[in-house]
Image 1 (cartoon, rainbow, N blue to C red):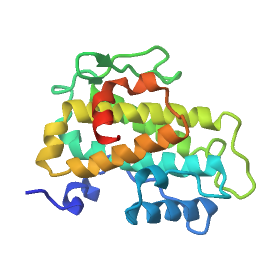
Image 2 (cartoon, rainbow, N blue to C red):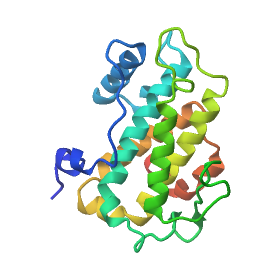
Image 3 (spheres, rainbow, N blue to C red):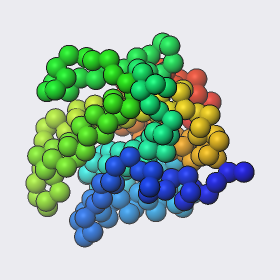
Length: 216
């Protein structure tokens, strides 16, 4: 029997605290609008479209933070099954291997266990979305010129979490009754990145067959 989502995605299993939007800000209002559309049962392809009159960078910022929260929660749910013993390499099957590089502590692409890679990834994303120079929250402060490039990098690396979870931990997802919820999260993510061409198609190759099956 499938567990209710409250049991599957409990706060106790969250990989790290959720990033929240400040009430009263434009970003918070956009977030509420996006969440209302999701809960209304509208077609996900339409839900991701930029609302009339809204700023594209604000729309992207809201979704990047939301996807970070959701994907962080998904990985937190299966992280107890993802150890250095079970997943000694951050990979997606035998064909795809992801190495960590951040230009600081890891100046060269470095092979790491999946759990270590995930920790570094979530720390890296969290530092970016909390950086006022990249994700400004004050009214009138413009986004940096490289904002969309930064978001593309974040979304590309978040995709790797989907790859690892689907390929290496799908049995655990199914046993918890979370398959439908995670599929919906993936579809939302996929339609969004496709709508605004935020990830090169070659990066999506590891889940191409599944994507064609559930997103068409």
